Length: 626
Image (tube, rainbow, N blue to C red; front, top):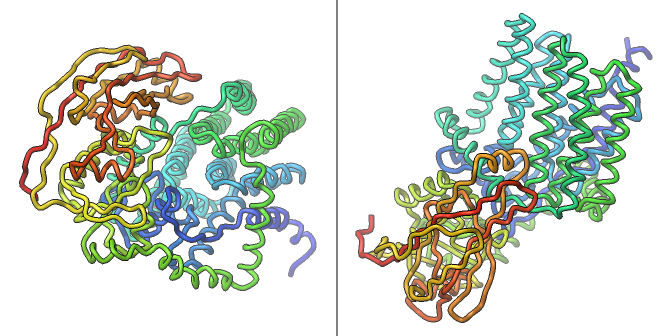
């Protein structure tokens, strides 16, 4: 019999606020366009539905369930995708609210506001905090183990969505297992570890992935995670750094002090470790690219203290602490930092409107989306290029891969998918191996670099292989189609023109070599002290200043982790026209007469002051095509 006392025990407030927050963040599909973000998102969707093997065929910052995280779609079961995305997001939000279930209603409202402020950006911050919330619930749970299984499985699922979430989830569960072993609850500790491992393997196989690829997925994903901060970091204005450091300190230091005051209790150390790991990963996730990404860190810095309230005995001090953190969150989000706050209300209204229509129509709202997919494809059709390629394999230079799927071409992906994601030598070499073992018949290219990088720095070894083995055949709508040559003339190192050490900012005159094809290798090894700074904050910024033969100077970004194998310095191939002219032996070409490498430390300490460089002349040599 349902009684008033039983109704009072129901988590009505948690479910209600979680559902309301879900509406304001409600995911909806949007049509694929051949641009950077939409392209990698639709490729990951294609990968899931066609069972491409992560760790063997492709790798990215996300995993095989990344399509649940990225809303773009090319028409694969859009209704089911929206339901799946909304479900996993709802569970993430609900996990956060359940972690503060017995706290005052104003705590729930604070949680709601922090989650709501993520309506104008991606859901990284919410997913990161939801793992923290689930871990805290496991730490303080006195219920039977079977009641904890759902939380563990949820953490395993998020690990398949994004590798950062996998690192956080595995680390937090590792802390919990260690605590159980310390408390001599070996059976429970092994159950947690085993449940996570078994559920991860079952999910991995259930979504079409080979279990044998799981170790390779972890290995290559780790390489991506290590290369990302060195390749994708952006510098925030100097005055923001100290504000961010203040926010981090206010979120972390009180937890450390509380742990020291309760140092005799093992659970307090476990809470501290989970909090520290969560805040550190949200800090790195938020500040690496700054901009809207900073919301991830701001959310965690405000929400993690709220999640800690159930562990604090002195509620007055706890409430004062979370109040200060929440006030700073509001100040930072709405007044100080570039979090895209001007779009917040607009995005929240649009997403909630779609969510209500989707729920009210039982998913029929996406029919409008599905009906437009053929039109979107038709409006992006490259008729002559599509006819030329036919059923042959094709890959994309740079990042506009969406055009391949819109034209339903036989896309043969390289491991890192897009050029800019070959963050280090390991990933670049993997792409090169793929190119040599299973080269596509065609390469489609259009202008496109990120963060003002030097055009041939991204995926340097892959680009060299393209220039060695492909020739232009036609252009259409700003796209250049390259076909693999029957008798390729690979570029080989003829001889070293210059080998020396240079200091940061030193100009190197290479005018006497400007008519040659020049490959530049840079021995970049930052000091250990700087690597520590890079781990805790972000790496230094490297720039290449070049002056052309015509006297035009420009500055470009370099990616330090890819410089050892070098890149094409001259001629500069920044556009499809320049690539076409170079491969067709036509003029004009942009030749470099002078260059310099600069370390721009920003807020980082111990910048690199000296580089070893090797300038190599390349020459074509006739090879046998495999």
